Length: 317
Length: 317
Image (cartoon, rainbow over all chains, first blue to last red; front, side, top):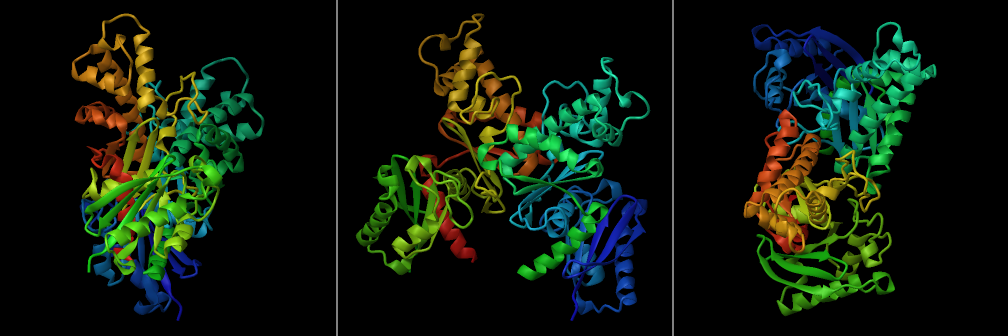
């Protein structure tokens, strides 16, 4: 009898849903809208309804479903409680696993979305074959998800893997979104790269293609690929900050591999060539062996990791 | 029937041994010499002989011994392999758990000594009642041992918890023992505090009791307690570095508590008053809840944690 799991990745605008076979194949994926109206009261019933519909459509029986994994945009403890609620969804503090489990009469495992995405990259993505990894998401901010011996490191208060807010620069005048100054995220996120670029371009010393048009992480790395000297300096600075930050992370959890994802990672392998030398410069000897890989699942990492969580927990318990 | 475990903490000069009841009571402790002669070939047989002798003396049968836990001065993987050997003992790479297990026909669990000491502080020491903690040893260097959900975080290559080598200062001209420059250990260890003190005292601006006699971490904190202004500045600098470093650690593993031990911690609670404000300044919001406590087991943390490892693993398997 075929066995299935659903993976759900809840975001502020839509929830992504995926139907997986227990071998990891993605059979179907779709999205439904989410809304903060009524403190997000409709979100879980809508998800449950959508999963029931899909089971009917695919003629999947209740017994064939191992469970439902959920990634949520907030800190989730090991019991499934959203410990600080989820402000983007209008949700307060409650047990997400329990609530959705009741609506579906299925086993539900919920966790923080960044950790769930990291789990996905370990199960079917850039970290496949490893069981201790740190997934680094370079997007608007810098997110982290940590897996140790196949288990997510959620942290005592759901703050495990908040690597974007490691203090990395003592000389910073602007504040980070978290109100501290000198966080890794201020230099290694997409917006951080733009800041580094603008600061560098304020020096009017060298010609650069970046002096015309809008600056983004993409235009910086496109210019790097074209051999633009100023862009190379900016990328080196980015790599120095991120390599230094990830060296600190490696000295703490000593992972087998860093899996780099998020919008900035679309630059490709060249990105790693700026991170790894700085990492090797700062990391402690015993932790030097960490590999670097690009994430491969893109926006599917969340649904994939959520389904994997349920399927893997089913297989080891 | 009473159940027992032995805890062994192997150092370069002596091995400490302890006999524990399964409730955590230490019944007896003693030391035997260790030596590098013959690549440390006699160390394990000597330990096995000493344990057998103690069993005879106390009339403990083979069946009453749950097992033997061992802390070793080197990186140990989850299977018990000393992955880089142990240079202080003249040991190469081998499976320590397996070897000692054969000699005694008992279950042996080996791990890195810093991680084992952390486990001891969780089981019976300053971290009692918690299951996610970071033990910080401020001695000649800065060591770390990490426990997450009751399990030691050994790391992929035994480098988990090497927090002393987190890069914390970009402006450093002297090299750390690891050859990098600006490691946490250069400011927060006993020797690091002496360095900070000498640098501060090179400025001949204020009177200080530290200007007479030898400088040590102890004399610095004694002067702090006496209200010496220069000593207060040095302690504030020490706290700034250590708080900043531990904030980075908290942003990665989000522990419930930091347990501060090692020679420097003999200064007492006043030490924490210099660390915590800096920690709170740099740590990310979701990780702010971490408590700080002093280690309580001193030199017994290793034997205690080693015995605890065996007893706890016995109770959950």
